[in-house]
Length: 286
Image 1 (spheres, rainbow, N blue to C red):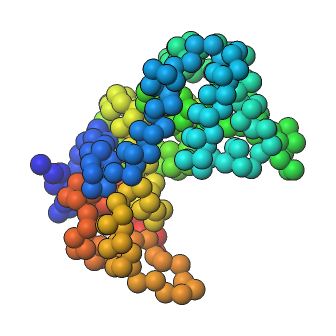
Image 2: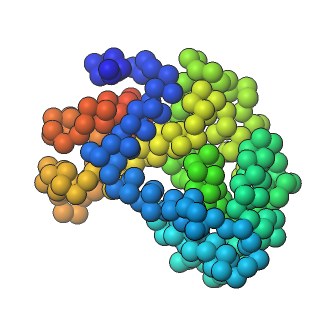
């Protein structure tokens, strides 16, 4: 059953509905095949028995921490390894200062979400400066990479913070604040780097699932930015690109705003509904 947004120019369902819709899309074999495959590959290094780390001080466990962080950094293009000297090693050093095992670190990430503070150990982990570049000799924060590390370590029970989350969570607040179980009065007043965790916690209240909230924000970000990688399987991708009329020297307009896109017969019904939702949530700039 689908929302009556299908024939409307208004968003009529609550945020949980669209989080569940995004999750349905990304766990299907039509649009979610590559996304799921990548997620499962990374998860093996965090949750399988042979990868449960009991002693971070042990050199083998430290090497496995480096493999985990490097893999996430590569898959998610956070570029800590490629654009900073010693960035990954600096993060590992800080992790080893505050925890000695996966279970201990998982507990600390969960406690951080219960009481988000700049001064506790996880708050300091997120606020730490790592690696160095020619223009930032003291290092840079790695909030996005560390949040993704925590997401996989806690088996998707920790929010990811990235450019899509930062860009689009406020739009969701504006759209759903009237008919969902949260209020903008609950939002933090300051604009510290960690205040986004407090905002995402509030946004997650009606959903009660950080993984589905991430699915929602990630899929919004992909569609709004003309990025269909990881959404379409190989066969559909070929059909998709054959439909696009590329003009040399000109930037392609946002594909989701094309009048004919929903008639291409390459998207599932849930994806068609989600595309219509994004077009209303983020109107085309003219």
